[in-house]
Amino acid sequence: MEYSQYDDNNNLSLSKFESMLKTNHVLFFDSNEFENIIHHYMDIGKMALAKKAIKLGLKQHPTSTNLKLFQVEVFVFENKLKMADQLLNKLYEIEPSNEEIYIQKANILSKKDNHEKAINILQQALEFSEDNADIFSLIGMEYLFLDKFEDAKLYFLKCLEADYEDYSALYNAIYCFEYLEQNTEAIEYLNTYLQKNPYCEVAWHQLGKQYCNTKDYTKALAAFDFAIISDDLFIGAYLEKGKVLEELKQFNEAIENYKITLALDDPTSFALLRIGCCYEKLGQDDLAVQHYYKTVEEDPLLDKGWIAITNFYNNNKNYQKALYYINKAINIDSENVIYWKLYAQINQRLHFLEEAERGYKRTLELGNYELDTWLARADILIGLGEYEAASFSLIQTAEFYPDHAEIEYRLAGLYFIINQSVKGRFHLKNALALDKDYIFIIEELFPTVFKRKSIKEILAKF
Image (cartoon, rainbow, N blue to C red):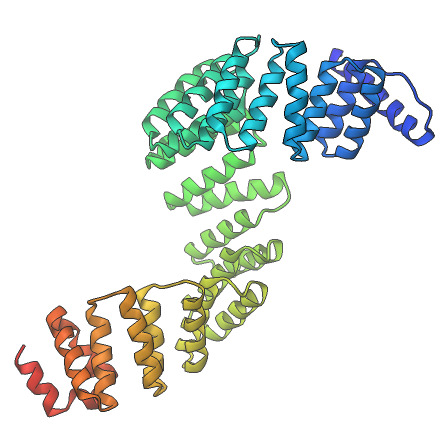
């Protein structure tokens, strides 16, 4: 009831304030009312109204430190750090033991990437604070900015000692454990934490994820079940449980959990995609492809959805449909390197060699420098009779993959076929020295070259 009463009073103050703005009649508010009004507008991102409230508040209460601290927050938000610093210095002279002044000073230092000094200031704030939890959390964040994960973890754990319901600190502490690859320690901590807070769905959820990291899927399932018992509307727990069931190849049970998330909230592309994958593994192709369609309808920008549809038709050797869907994907995101590689591979299977070469070229331009991409493009250029382009491409490949037999055999064959025998012999000898077993490359790609007497003579010497 007390909360409701407070909420009603706050709403009354807001209505009164907004009415005053519309009518231009100046009304009186006590400083606490102004603080609540400003806090409300800052929380919902209405900075213009927050600034009006601060201005009017300081007119009516010019000595209010708290209202001036809100002014500092606005200065920091607008990146007016010098003005914020000057105001804080004045406030420090008046109230040197006000912890909020130290917190705001640290915030400014953090904005300037001076995290070590920010930590020192926050340490000073602890001397004047009655509730240290928030300051511990801020110190932890500063250590995160410095990539000092062990120190950050220590302060997030201190924060949880002071306030074990600070779930933001819990998430950050577990993030530090994970970064430090301390899965066992994270599990130990979470089990201890759950003794104090046994119905904390967040902790059970995080514990389940840690067990997944250690591949202890039975314990992970139990943890996610406890998360669901603690909060049967916790969508994240159902999703994680579904992923574990997939790992255990219990696809029907995984589908059930994913479907629960669809019933609890608006459909997510992730859940729809996973349901489709499960149906595909169960051999229920119609249901699989239906869910893949729903995935891209729900989120056309989710590349995994388009890749799943394309691979579905690819695996079923329906290359025309695979090409249709990968073209749709490219029309949505023409910079996606995975799309272009699939486009190239599908066109190659359809024997559309010029389109396949275009796909591989675009894949390389977008930064996919995998050896198989370079070699696939070179082989297509060879098939198209574009020998100079193929040799130029392979020379580029050799810069990324020096002393590689598969490249050397192709260069040898190309130089022989364009009658540059000296270069051909050089690359063939290099290739044979690197790996004799790849000689089949010349036999397959350059059969006329392979039959030459001069080639047989070189091969006989190795």
